[in-house]
Amino acid sequence: MEKLPGQEQISDLVPVPKESLEIDQEKALRWVEAETNPDYQAIKRKIVENIQHVSFQEFKENSEKVIQEVIDELAKDNEKYALFFDYKPHSSKRWVAELNTDVIKQYPPVDAGYFTPTWERMSGNKRLRDLTESKSNTFLIIDDGAYSGEQVFQRQIKPVLDFYEKEGIEQMPKFIVAIPYVTNRFLKLMKDVETDRKCKIDVKYSVIMPSLKEILDQKEIESIHKHGDKLDATSSEATYLGATLTYFDHRVADGHSFSEEVKGVLELDTPKPYADETRPYFEKETNEFETYKQTVYKP
Image 1 (spheres, rainbow, N blue to C red):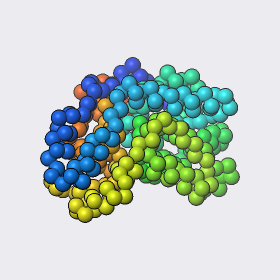
Image 2 (image 1 turned 60 degrees about the vertical axis):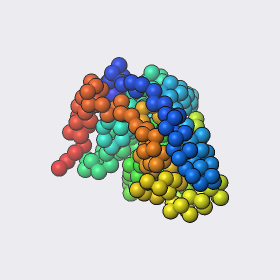
Image 3 (image 1 turned 30 degrees about the vertical axis):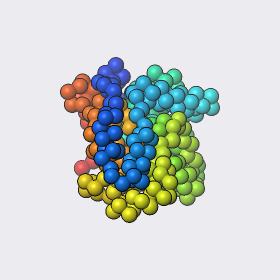
Image 4 (image 1 turned 90 degrees about the horizontal axis):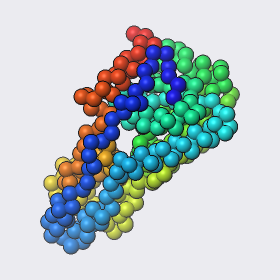
């Protein structure tokens, strides 16, 4: 991967999960069998049976697969592109890119780095101006999973679209989203944005993560409503049917992405390797982000 001025490569330090996060089957069975209502017990059993554990090896293979497909297409068309990470350090986007550095460097981006919309505007959107002037109108977005899609849209796609529209640039940008695990909700949002904002969004993925709403049938959903919108009587909040039952060795998503009730009952949690302050990767990424900040932040 090409590096920005002052950006230090950290690929050899990329941390991975220390262990596999398997489901405690006995704990899951106790949760199911503790339910006295036969119909509701069947719902809980169905939920447990549909929990998807993605091992790190499986995740790595699928992320490499979608990113390799993108890089091959870009190289074939000799298409210049920019690769923007998150607006902050220690998140999954930078980490996934580093895991796939060997693939990305086969056809490196003309610009790769963090992208904090507010700071970029402070600098007069110089990076975006330089890219458009050099006819680089393709933007690659990489991550591990996409759920609602709001973060991808609000923090990566929308700021670029707003710039193009404000500047009156005739050729609208093209976004390539390479995320191995996505939801149907995410795919719909990307299609809606593509239609509403008249831009091109090409989504590359390997696996669709079904939501609870897609896993359960209408009768089962109505039963949950009758139980106060809760899977478990001890739950403090209502069940969010838009959440998935898919989790990774490197991360268990929050309640808007992975069922909070299931996460709590099964005590599913794991430290994110890219946010581990004890590893050298954390320090180097912190320094990298500080260098970026100094180039764009204008207090």
